[in-house]
Image (cartoon, rainbow over all chains, first blue to last red; front, side, top):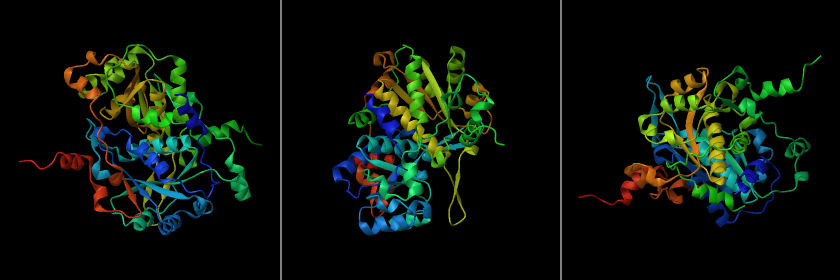
Amino acid sequence: MPEVLDALSSRRARRAFSPSPIPAGVQETLWQAVALAPSHGNSQPWRLLVAESESVRQSLFHALSPGNQSWAGHAPLLVAVAAIPANDTVQREPDGTQRELWAFHAGIATGNLLAQATALGLIAHPMAGFDSAAVRAVFAAPPDLQILAVVAIGYPGDPDSLPDDLRRREDAPQGRLPLDILAARDRWSPAHATSMKEYRDRAAGPRA
Amino acid sequence: MPEVLDALSSRRARRAFSPSPIPAGVQETLWQAVALAPSHGNSQPWRLLVAESESVRQSLFHALSPGNQSWAGHAPLLVAVAAIPANDTVQREPDGTQRELWAFHAGIATGNLLAQATALGLIAHPMAGFDSAAVRAVFAAPPDLQILAVVAIGYPGDPDSLPDDLRRREDAPQGRLPLDILAARDRWSPAHATSMKEYRDRAAGPRA
């Protein structure tokens, strides 16, 4: 199944959407991919808030940050990824501290969603810039529902439809930390703590 | 690319491992899948702690919970998924609260790892039962490194090598919440808050 790496590597957070709607059967495949994610104790704390009607899509759009509003309105499908912390287990460490798992679990489920969407030829662009309380209000969701991302989903459109600055970002190279920073083999070293910003600044070289 | 759903749906947290080692090139493909995950602002806060030597693998094994020690010692590769919160961005909500993203981001990266491993014919079994401080100590990692999972990775082995109770779990059906609980379309309802435990208890029917 080499297509998995193809899907992961061809995934890009693009912004140029076609207005074509996403057939119901295709949407179901996306939600199935989310449902199949693993969780400790099979707790499945993740939930999806799907904007199905045009009025709810508009309301969810208005809960996005101004930067995201500059492009996400063209996506035919907006979906919030959420989690219910009370439905998840909490791990107790031997030192008495607690480790919550719900955000991590919802991340795994979102990884499934993005990989599946890419494999279906869709753009799936996750956003962190939104007003959580406003997202909850759109769906009349309770205050304990944690919103982790709003994902704009649609088929690829014409990049020339985007403003210049966003069009240039559609195919700009995606910087990634090299594997010798990402993976500590047998022993951690301070180099592994290098942030992406530090790595980029270093790669750009010393300035005058 | 229908293979993505195949990989997601054939993924199981199995416990019967073959002792065959995982070639270095295959390991690289796994780490590449992690590196390709998206993150807000491209922060890439996730890190991998890879037990490369036998002595580190043994030490990491001893940081697992007793339940996980009953089977994970047969996995040829143990890897901890970690994150550096200080390397990630924090979202500010309009109401002044902050939303951290590092656990969610590390979850997306882990989703990539599990999908890629399954596509390569590997078992990748994520565990939440471990002592975080002990995992950090194995790798001499700093206290601000958050450990999210330890993943046991290897090729499938003979299920009959497992104790009876674990062998029965290798192919037991995986319960999943139905899509009408998972996905709220346009409006949340209390049914969406149903936990997996409640759902299972309800499916089992009323008891005498």
